[in-house]
Length: 250
Image 1: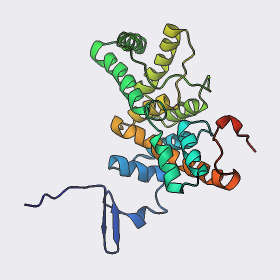
Image 2 (image 1 turned 90 degrees about the vertical axis):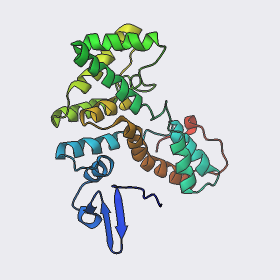
Image 3 (image 1 turned 180 degrees about the vertical axis):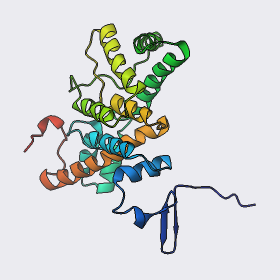
Image 4 (image 1 turned 90 degrees about the horizontal axis):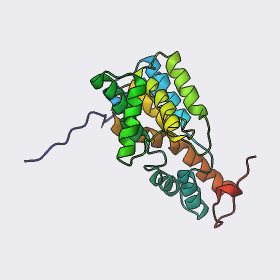
């Protein structure tokens, strides 16, 4: 007996391509990238507000200069003469737990704090304090907070501003902001909500499953990796050690 696998994502027949049951030519030019990305990942059309929020999330992490490990990996391969696909693949492989891959972990932490509010009748601050103590006792770090460059991440500020404008902001964004304050109080360090944490809170507000979260970062960053790999081969001599400190902006 032959086992037939199931898919509900896309289907191709002669002269017909469908995405989640919608004909591709009907989506082309009629729906935004945020609309179609949401439809592809979640399986249903977003509200206009959700579409704008998702597009803003993608734009927020589309690129972050030459210093991130993923960019360094991509330009290193490009510098050795590697093809575009190899350079971009190298960059994607550098996106892991501590670089771009923290969105899922941040969703888990923020979601856990909000669940403490629900199950134990806590306000946001005591829930944050309990979560921070729990993580400290287990020797774990709460993802989504702190940044090596930004004392206040401009992407976080804009994402939360937009979420409030679109009336998407709710308990998860509130909890993330309170967590930021509690972490600063408990550690004595400035640990701002970074892009990973902001994206995590916004995705939670839109009921995204955590297992998709890191994929959204990868989808966004591919565009930046393509740009850097192409530029590296056009502007810089081959077979030179790639050092982010040796770049200048023109």
